Amino acid sequence: MAKKKAVKPKYVSFKLHGKYPTQKVIMYAAVDLIISLALGFFLQAQVASAFAFK
Image (cartoon, rainbow, N blue to C red; front, side, top):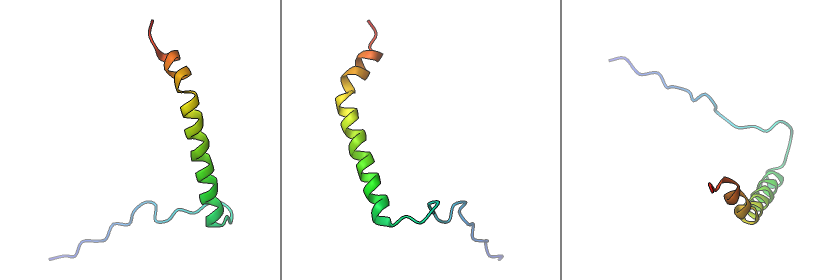
C-alpha cells in the first residue's frame, strides 16, 4: 500500500508587511471593532430607513 502524500495548505502562515508588535496589532483591531460597532449602532436607523420600501 502506498503512503498518501501530506497536502500542504495554500497559506501556511500569516505575516504582516512590516514589523508590528503583536500588542499593537491587537490594539488596532480592538479599536477598529469598537468604532465599527458604535457606528453600526448609531447608524442602524438611517440604514434601515434607506432600505425600507414605502
